[in-house]
Amino acid sequence: MTTAFSTRLKGALLAFGLAIAALPAFAQDDEPKMIPAPDRGADEGSGPHERLIIRGATLIDGTGAPPIGPVDIVIEGNRIAEVKSVGYPGLPIDEDRRPGDATFEIDAHGHYVMPGIVDMHTHTGGATKAPETEYAYKLWMGHGVTTIRGVPSSNMEFALAEKARSAANEIVAPRMYAYHRMGQGERYEDRQILTPDEAREWVRWAARQGIDGLKLGSHRPPIMEALIDEAKKLGLGTTAHLGQMGVAHMNAIDAARVGLDTQTHFYGLFESMYDNNDVQPWPADMNYNNEQHRFGQVARQWNLVTPGSDKWKSVMQEFLELDFTFDPTMTIYSAGRDVMRAKNADWHKIYTLPSMWNFYVPSRESHGSYWFDWTTADEVAWKNFYRVWMQFLNEYKNLGGRVTVGSDSGFIYQLYGFGTILEMEMLQEAGFHPLEVIRSATMHGAEMLFKPRGEEPQFGVIRAGLLADLVIVEENPLHNMKVLYGTGATRLDDENRPERVGGVKYTIKDGIVYDAKQLLADVKAMVDAQKAELGDLEEY
Image (cartoon, rainbow, N blue to C red; front, side, top):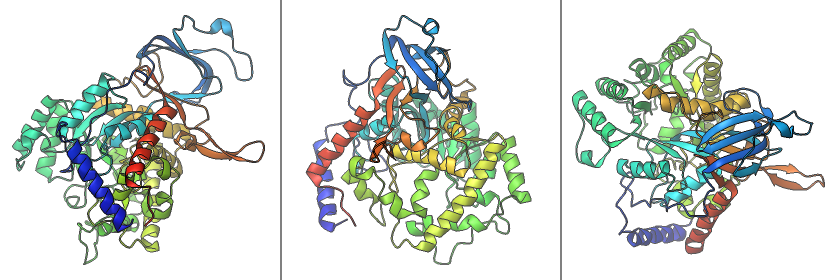
């Protein structure tokens, strides 16, 4: 990106920050202020309805069961009341079997309905790249993402305020689960947590504020044990990014043994299975604060483990016995194996803010913008790494292990919503059947959000009695996952002309029907407005 544009962008963002100084002071990671989502407009979303009936759809229920249709789905208020088979493919609908008395109907004949997607690894914007939370929320909702687990979404006070507004449907946004890092919260802003007792005290305080779980690092063992033990007592979930600075004393199997629920990314997994090492053999000039070192070198672990070895199998078996869940978030590092593809994705010109593009530009400061001198060898290492990582995930799934979908978008050329669908595509690449992919993206994610409290999931499957979180798409996602992208998929029409097909048609959250394409049009308008002020995305 040109220096002139970068300078102009930074100046405009500074002025923008000053203009909103009267708003509540919510900052994320020491960034300028973020803007809460506006109240939901009277024309945004229809419902909930007394008796909404979705007519004639083919149902993908989220459990892994095969599609069935045509069905009519009855929603009363925010709950699914009935799923009724109303005929057979290729034959007229049996009108006598159809439920009646609808107060609102959706004609879904020829369409596919699946549960709302659960994204288990999200961050909401960031004031220097996407200050308006509406931008991320509508990108998620426009892709059928009806639930997000923020790890964290922003600082605690901001995240909990937005979570409450979403739960009341005051804003257009997915359901929110708030997971937070040790020591977050205004009360702890200037305090350090140095002992297990202090760690427990923070967990108890954070639970009283209303958080849903902990986002852990690779803390030293006494702290890790205290955090997880206290979380379990209080019905809080736990997930961990077992970063390289602490993984030598807390890898994935270590963390699972002390009760961790979920690992995000891959950190700590390979370190649990090394053949001939206990720590990664870093090069002598390694410096973790150099992000090309950090992200380039970590992929060099691919040949330190042996797929199918006794150690591989024994570690996998122990994870299974511990009922451990993997939330791989493969999408966020996928640019590492083909940076040109990620940089030139179809959606950037339409849906990526110039301020976000500026964040993606190679930088020694912006997290994840590590393309200082990215080489073919770096990309080959990542391709090999993914091959081994995907094999582990597929084998774990085949043995009954739970794998969920998370995106971590907002970094490394990955955009909210689009990154979630890419993650689903990557699970299919790993060997998951499309039905297994959708199960990971719906039922399995929901299970992990309710499991800490010992409760049955209230969404994630289309079944009578559960909350009405659904996605309606005109094309078959089992045939082509790409039809879930907001930019759809390309195919030739009958006159040999390329056309775009797909994109989510309706996203239903809590019984409220949203026009998904309109949500994306709202995002495009936000992008166009910023381009008018700052200029279009520029090459670099």
